[in-house]
Image (tube, rainbow, N blue to C red):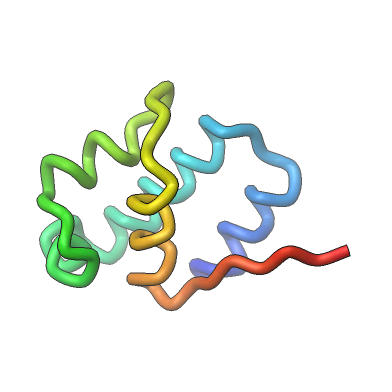
Length: 75
């Protein structure tokens, strides 16, 4: 369900919409649990997932992987 939601937003969303979707997913998991899974602090997660910010790609990738997602490029 989480990956389906994120894929839908990735297909048509802009950067802010993608961060908003990742933030919704992160909160549904729990920021403390996600922090443990990613190795990031809770404060860093909140900063990473703030709309209007420009997070590091590595941090975003850690979040996606923490909930079982993966990134692919398709034609």
